[in-house]
Image (cartoon, rainbow, N blue to C red):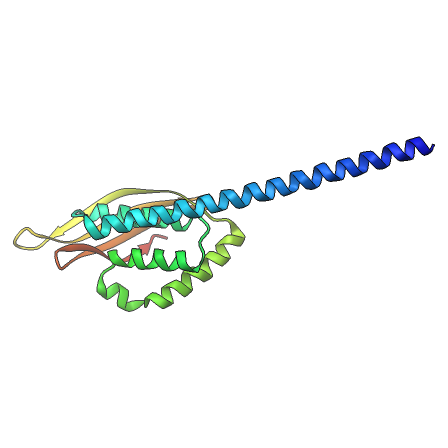
Length: 182
């Protein structure tokens, strides 16, 4: 009987040790994965900002694609306050001044931080954004002055259809707002 109790005690201790070690390994693995994702998200924001700053797109559709790419980063990777700020600063570079005036950068950061906290609980992730239609309006001289671009944003919770409104501001396409289709 003493031998049986001894064997059971050893099995429990060894099993507990293996379980604790494996649990620690998984936690370390998850932390390393999150760090890698954050680095990837930051790198992608940096790449997009570089495109905006050095080679600003000439087509309205390209601006919406950059917006989609930035949203993909925001709704895929974990973000701390500094990353949210970098994201917001970068995305505002493709917004019209009129649109930026409606929502200050500080307010946008606060709203996004709150949304990310809520989203973290619900695990909503942007899976894909597809541009479905593009309409460009020209003035009397034939110059492009405004555009409407329809996009379907697919998340793991469903899809949303948005129409983006763009204007030319100082010769560059800028997002002036959007409307979510019902």
